[in-house]
Image (tube, rainbow, N blue to C red; front, side, top):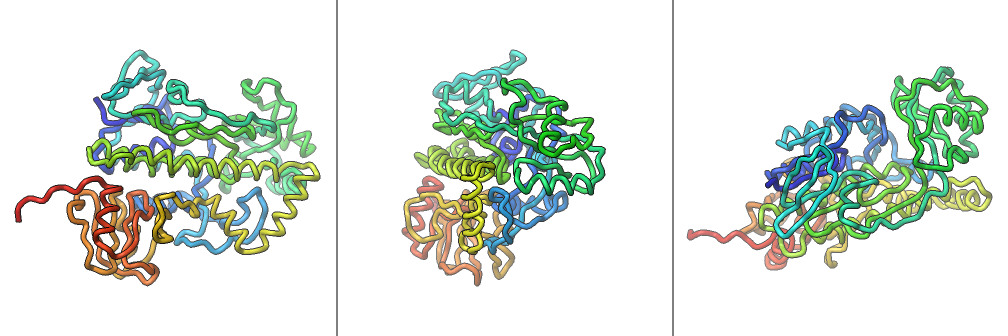
Length: 479
């Protein structure tokens, strides 16, 4: 009997495995692919994910392997200056998904996660005591909990019978990586011209060398969307939209995506959970998918660890769905809006011009970028101080900075009064008496995911919130 089985070893599953291992949870990751993918699906990390890497002491590794770029121009490709954001990391980190997966796998493995490649979950059954996973090779594994991080065609979700409603695709786009014989200056000139009217088109490298990432509308390519695209399909569509195929050859991978969206009706069914693309799928506009999954993992990880350890308060596991389902719904909405703004008909183009005009206002520009970067999220934790339910940015302290105190993934009481106590919760919550000129509140209680659970200076009120999020206090022995 393992503690947790994770089906799927992409960014979501690997981040979740690491979060669980911070709390000594016995976790096994089952990934059906025998080797890590070499092709690049996602291109970077947004502000909130960057902050999470900083919270776990991983940021330097990611910065060493990525490139910092401004956050402007991410909403429907409308180019505006990067707005001022309430973060110490006001940039997007350009980093290929294979590198992100490698760094997260190294992190999870160093913490003791058991990652098994070439192992596919084919079915499951659960009872009052645990979950049995049936593997494609006929083997079985049993655990107290199982999390499906196995993508948009999730076997786990289908085995659970969880509904996955949404809208079918109306417009497909081809996406792939391949070599190009045309000179870079020719590619740049033609792409710039085509993108004046067709924003679902692009050719570019993620770095100074390597294959080109090719994006081109797939209108009329195939009636059967289940048929994989071919290099000939790319050449044909490039000719249609650019008048040249740029001499594309030697593809590393070819795929298509549509503008359809789907969202699981529930993220939990008994002892089984869904996270990442297994819970929500949408077009890649704004680069939100990978980031959304990583943030799912950090929200769920400490809660599941609390259940395994036996101190989870009633209802804690249910807050995963209550908090993350609305976040994904908002992402699906902003992606739907962005897709409409990419349409070439006069109506959508008129709306696009109007929105571009409104984005001249700093507040509008900031509002839309905060949606994309996930720093505007506020969970409904029942009211209180304006900080409650929001993530707290990395603030400087007299003795360092906040995120340096969060590497272990525990709760944290940042006490500027010096007179509060974590009492019987010291095994789950760190107490730091320090001050920050950037924090205008006596004290804050941070959950392990970095969101504020309480703010104030009243010990009795603090104890109530410690109980709500971290369970009953540990009885103290005789003095």
